[in-house]
Amino acid sequence: ATIASEPTRAWYFVRSQCHQFLQNEEEARQDLEQYRTTEARTAFDYYLPGLTALWRGDVNEALRACEAALAIQPDHFHSLYFVAAILQEQGRDLEASHAFRACLALRPDHVSSLRGRAVTLCNLGLIDEALEAANKALAYGGSEWEWTARGDCYFKQGKLDDAVADFTRAIEVNPRFSPAYERRGRMHLIKKQYEVAVADLDRALSLNPKSANAYSLRANYHHQLHHPQQAVADMDKAIEIEPKVANHYVHRAWCLVYLEDYDSAVADFARAIELDPKNNYGYKMHAQFRVICPNLAYRDPPGTLALAQKAVELAPQDGEAWDVLGMAQVRAGDPESALECMRKAQDLRAPKEEYSLLFRAMIHAQLGEHEEARRWYDQAVQYLADDNETDELSLDLKAEVEALVRMAADAADAAVSAATPNDQGPTPTQED
Image (cartoon, rainbow, N blue to C red; front, side, top):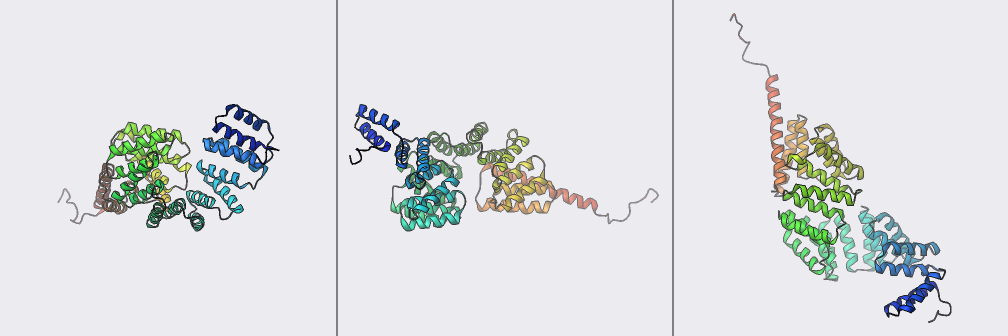
């Protein structure tokens, strides 16, 4: 009423929304027509329709509207914040982190911008900067979201106990905050604290039955405890909720592998790559499955090598991808190149797990370096014992490598025997 003497484009838009809410269809239509024909003069004229588009779920329209508002007024804080939030939601972390930084230049104590910057920097692997932003957010805020953001930073640093403490604090602030239960459940899974892990994940799902992430994590729990059918059932639910998330298909594929349903697993790996062809995870995991599959029909060394090479091409700083490429080269009969790849993986600090340790032993066995092969094999055996690993894939691969290491040692012994002079005197001649 106070601005009705000179209504703006935004004013017509707001009143049209009020009429729609009150089911005054003709008045709403008239105001929307005025909105469309009135020239936009301020950032607010674009921002308000953008905000409404965001509420409707039309993210692209909201982004266009907020960017148009910023073209008129580059320091329009609300438009800038929603651009940052939308970019974060779309997974465009680098652009989002810059946008949140611009927000903080205008309002250094804006908690949501500090938290958003912490989350995006954490996703980018810039953990020290992310932790600094998270600590500032906690200083100004202290909601469950800020505690969760800092917990994520601690997780990326490998400080699992600190992460658990922050997720627990988030739950104390809001006992119905399902993301904190999911994250704390994940920490317990990593620490192999299975009972408390599944309790957290069950609680998360009771609070939010539409959480695909919680189903995926609970599938991981079943996978680690060798319950493949329950794991597949949980991944089915995750895919039902988020059918376009490529990594869900990768995770279900591995569950299917342990049911020996290899054809369905291959189909899921292919679907993951189809959904996200620029994500190296699908290529990497598909290649790893093929190099360790006990059914030789699925090995396909040339095809597996191509998958592993693509994984490295897409993410050259991913040490695990270099490890898998080394495994693929072993299967392709190129131990020299395989050794180079696995050394590259070491430089990138790829975790030493049973598969990489066993394939490293296999490389040295193929190169005839039996002592080095035995050393890596013994490390793998110790890892499996410490991890209490009993899954058939690991044990089948262990048996294969054990045989190769034994053959390399036997070949070395035979070579030494052949090269050792006969000390029983000269061979008797015909005359003797």
